[in-house]
Image (cartoon, rainbow over all chains, first blue to last red; front, side, top):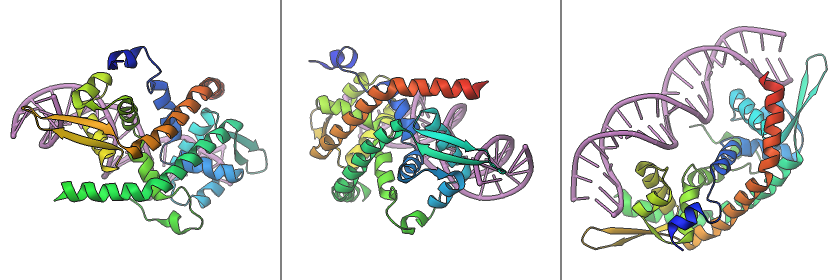
Length: 126
Length: 126
DNA sequence: CGGTATCCGATGCGATACTG
DNA sequence: CAGTATCGCATCGGATACCG
């Protein structure tokens, strides 16, 4: 087949919606947050302690996005000062399996990537 | 950038190297480019035709990154005006399987995500 | 053909300050 | 405790122009 048929008629390309969804979930912090929530449900400041490098702004943003996409549930516990607990949804867990596979791949191929980078840099850098 | 405070904190989080590698490969265009090169080796302008929405700047950047990370090979054919062919490396193919899984997941879960978004927006929007 | 160089607006993210 | 609001910088990425 030629490229035009593959692009417009054949199997789905990486559709716009795909990219959009992946961007929502594979951003700088969401993956890490999801991973931590898979270990156990956590409160907001608990997450900050577990991920010391995240700012509250970014943590809030990541949690909102994950919540909006149905990856985590936000549970408000009405105590004197309110408590909020975040927990991974069933949907979020299905993603986690894939992420684990992806990270496993990254771990395994890392050495080869490192070699490729050195070869590239040596050839182009000087 | 910040220090590797998280890296020393205990068990491996989603390590810095993981994030870095994923960022290199899962960015806006690299995934799509890799996918197209998996179908068949392609030339630069051929890729632009197959992915009409990418600017040459972004395509160049994506290709360079993929090449540097050992995901694609750049083959220069010394004709009158030079021809350059890009093809997926063996390493790149191992990634493709995972990407397919990820896109498959995105396709399957998309409806549920859509519902989650509508519920979220309805509750928070007004 | 296969790029590079430059400008420039949009977005991401951290730091900081404030709030119910 | 669990956020919101604002700032300011850095990076991303499209548009345009030029080059071997």
